[in-house]
Each structure stands twice: as C-alpha cells, then as structure tokens.
Length: 187
View 1: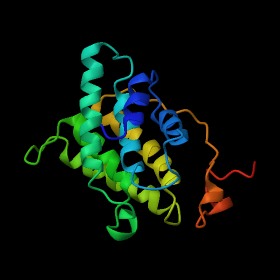
View 2: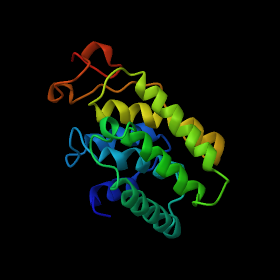
View 3: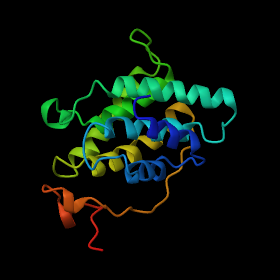
View 4: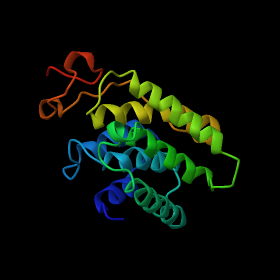
C-alpha cells in the first residue's frame, strides 16, 4: 500500500465506528487538508470497521488485501473529480468499498444495484451540502450515509455516534462555507 500510514492506522484500529476512524485518519499528520487521499480514506474506514473484532492473522491479511485493492481503485479517481466528473471521490470510495466487501464483479448481478443506489444516495446528501471544494465535509457526509447501507445490505455492524466533529482545516479552505457547514467551528 503506497500510503503506509493508512494501512498502519487501519490495522491497529479496534472499533466499529467508521466516522470515528475517518476523523482519526483525517487528523493524521500525513493527511493533507484536501485531495485524492480522501478517495481512499472513506472506503478504508468502512472496510476496517466492517471487520471490527476480526483481528486474527488471517483477518488482518484479508483487511490488508482489501485496503490495497481499495487504494488501487481509488488511485484512478483524480483530484477535483467532483467538478470534472460530476462524482465526488468520497462517494466513489464508498462504492469501491461496498463492491470489494460484496465481492462484486463486472458480470455479477448480486450487489450491483445496491452499490449503485448507495452511491446515488450519498451523492444526493453531498450535493445538498451546498458547495464544492471541501473533501473533509464530503468525506464525513459520505461515511455517515454509507454506514446504514453497509449494515442493511452487507450485514455489517457499523455504529455511528451522534457526535458532530469540529473542522480543523476551515481556515485553509478559501471556499469554506463557514456557518453553513455542519462541521464548522468558531473555536
């Protein structure tokens, strides 16, 4: 895995709350405020927490393989995909993680429409957030929107707390929505 810090953090993670893991990943010193790394982080949080409690060597190896596959797929989604493709990379990351977890293949009908519907739902939530150019906001929206889909369609036990994290990078974002963003903090 090219981003070894993501793999290391995910293999060490103990919980089943992908939003909490996402916050830990985004707060890591190696994580930039913006950019395509978010196209891997969201799916990594979902895949890791979907395997909560599975920490024997075989399960760690399986998670490492899933994360490597996610990074391979996520590296195909460029920065600014939201503006240039009309598809947010964080939502695409959720779709990639869903497909990996479901074992989807190009001609396998099972899981195909569910993954598409999940990504459509996530994109709708992101689109209603109001503006482009905030990978952290969109990553947070994506992971919280994807978790119920993973639980319902894939039988995972992902949990989400009710805590709303405070953004630590709003000052670095000239396009920040400030008070119109649910994660903006004046503190």
